[in-house]
Image (cartoon, rainbow, N blue to C red; front, side):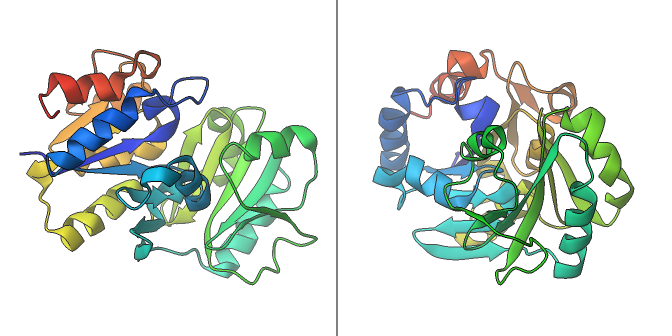
Length: 262
């Protein structure tokens, strides 16, 4: 019996216009009635997720910042911070990426130096709390990850600047213009296992949905691991199953219904 469903947001639960299908609210209530917990696993900031799901946030588990920060019913379940010296090194490298903008995601806020309107507009889709500061290397906060907003394409541009670090740190291509660098153990798969341990839920009782490379570790965290029909090829290969519908066709909720969970 499924007891935990974990879904990525962008490209998975949301359509390409970043909209949540209205059927979600009804489905989530039915899942709750059936004793199934729904969790959101995203590269987004916790405060962004908590705002989007404000009316039911006490029922959901949030795996924010790619699993670096996990919150359930206002309780911190797990946090995996990034060493400040390492973060400062990544900030320095990121500042030299062509068409790249650096965001430092902290427990209390996200921080940027640039006031470029295009960049801030894009960042605002994923970060509810953003502060403009003079120096990203001088922050008084627990650092969760360093993010590069790369308008040249993260997989073919900024990733190449950080590839050499991926044996010691988690370098995740989170989207076409997003690259996240975090502590080695900080990923959605680790976060799911912390939740399973905390709540007494097994691998066999877990279902996950993802579409992009920052979802890779999720694919081994639940018996029912689903790649979206239009997912990145590497996620399609890693997943145990593939949805019959894309994210634009409400693929997550359609699969939940097909599985007879509601």
